[in-house]
Image (cartoon, rainbow, N blue to C red; front, side, top):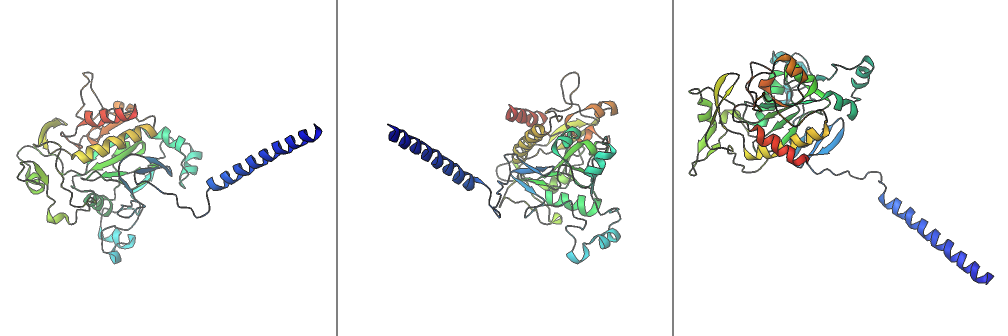
Length: 341
């Protein structure tokens, strides 16, 4: 009996040692080895240095074919003429090498000292960001939009949304992009590729940018003066989501606009849902009056100061009409809410 008990104990300890060895081997297999590639899926946005999936194609400023708003040089000038030293002389609007700033409003002196070097953490950024401002770019394509903003106007925006639904991120969302004046410190901005809205009888741009084919449905035809389209989807044909221009009132003015593309709406729904998930103070809603309908003019300053959610550029400034009368607010917000359930 004593010998049997000894064998039993030895067998039990052997099983324990084998188990510990297996755990050690498993830990060794799952630990990250130096030089291991951390793969991305191509749908991530960058928020305070962290990556969040959107479920739609995103090209960041770090990627091939991306647009980098951190650069001081002009992106589309000849390389030997693109430096800041040359650019500040060539383009009067370029007053500073930076096209973005610091979200410092409301921060303590200690917080400013911490974040001025890039040291934002996600909890602090979540406290500060509570608006998502929508623009049409009036340039027609994201490539042309970045050229105008970065090379000519010394402005910036966090996202651009091209005709094919590709989202470009030009800055980490911790940065204060220059796109919506008084809302810059607290907002995220997106420029959606669309030539814009015009008064009835003044739609010459429509003739330049839209042609009807045999189907009778309009398609976007980029004028030669705009240069390369930069659209990443090969042979992409951009068509507005609705066949005819939409007539509506913005800032008390009657305007006509061709709708955005279905691909743009699909991508924007997913991006909006992502941002509302990442930023708890960013409500998934748009400005509505007492009747529950969309407000189509600038919000009074006190209401704008309190507003948290998705809004148009025209809700921020009286001299703006974007994203225009064609924009389908309920489609975007309703779709985003479904994804958040």
